[in-house]
Length: 308
Length: 149
Image (tube, rainbow over all chains, first blue to last red; front, side):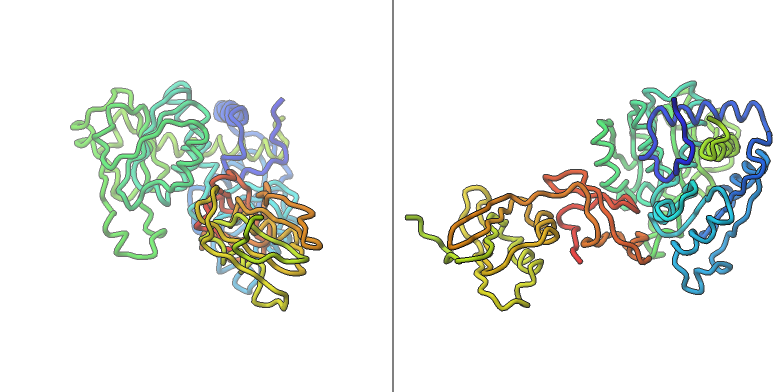
């Protein structure tokens, strides 16, 4: 029997295929059943050391819709970190105030350090360019919903594959389901070798290409990501690659693609996806964004032991 | 009788089968500049197994487990010979541990272990060639990325 009670959700590498499917099944139930009070009396600490709107708000909404309460902050300036307090000390103090922590941080591995430091469950809300597992569950939930299942899909990852943590996490997760993967990026933003090694160890078939039209006809899912300006230390490097891929209705009409191709994007977008794409049958990214609530409700409820 | 290219020692440790390029890194691990005993270093010696090898002999020295672990990351083929009365009384090949704590630095400048006062931790995911994964940021490091502290 699967139980996620007290489990930290830090990296998709920590989660088994069975646990993924369990989370997606419960998420479907959550979406169908709506609000409840199963987390009444529980307090979530939303610790956002780096700005985020949708991850923070969706966790807050999810907690409140299940009857729980939320405390926290969303900027570094209001924390004791500016006084020189270590992350470990901060979270060890805060764990006394709450039942569960969601952490977003600019340092990679900050969530793992937090989970190692406290005894309450910790959910990684994104750390640096590393993992963002809850977004991955949202992505998986959307893929399962729009394709009817997760097995044996061809998935293209487009855009910033060097710093794009959502692509990294989703690739790991899809490796459980026999996916064939196409990594489409400019040479300077190729997926790091680490991730390819991990995929190789999981016997994933993958291809690296620079242009979408080389592989578009093979794809069931196109996972598009923003080129993240904030990850570039050199603005010249950012200018070289910004706008290198621009999807629009016109581009999709010109490309050879499957009729039932679906395009996902973790949002926000900048100029990689034109609004003309929004009304096409390919676009499912707003549906994807809305799935953030039932998925995060599920994660909160299962690790807090409210659903067994 | 076999003629040694580097003279024998009477009591101490001989580290053999070090890939030539790693010889002085191993010497640094052992901090030989800070010790008073006799140290003999052979470099670019012929080796059937490695092609070219290094060897380090230190009079009166026994390695600590931490030193052996460090050497295993830099010179995974190395063998350690304990010498007493000019005889080899114990011989073993260094072994890469399954996890490594403390003496390595994560090469990712944005890793939390490089910014907070925490002990670094790594999981060994492959021993030959060596690949390790940072416990915190999950980035992989190979032989060229390994930086001992």
